Amino acid sequence: MINENWEDLFDDVILDRGYGYYENGNVKHVYQTDNGYTAIVRGRDMYRVSIDVDSNGDIIDSYCTCPYGDHCKHEAAVLYAIENDEIEDADEFSVEDAVSALSRDELEDLLLELAEDESIKERIFGFINEI
Image (cartoon, rainbow, N blue to C red; front, side):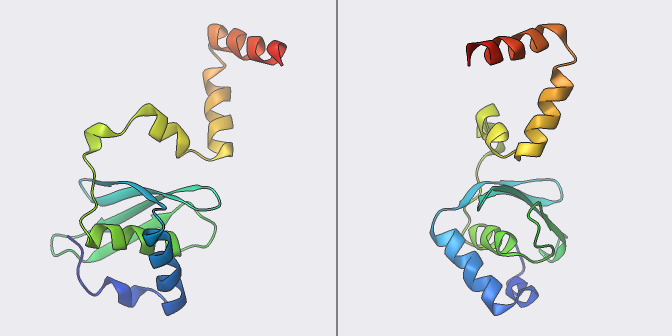
């Protein structure tokens, strides 16, 4: 669990926005990891959030893929979800969930890497020819 003083890490405005995201159901797929927690938050894009905690529940590091930087509303939203014990079983995370969490740039990079395989490249060109 997370130390109850985690809110002290955030500005009040960011906490309010994060709580709004949490209340609106924007936090998706919160999982416990070896180092803490990871989650996906739907904002303007899908953002990945990681919260690393020590054995006392103190936050030792956090990260979000959004452009804001440290201690953003997405991280706050995830912490509200964790505080309310909304943690899912990692075994239920699907490929669809993983793909939906990738940014456009990450998807393009992945597709280009996969396209090095001739059969994948042919399938891509097949899709383009159907358009």
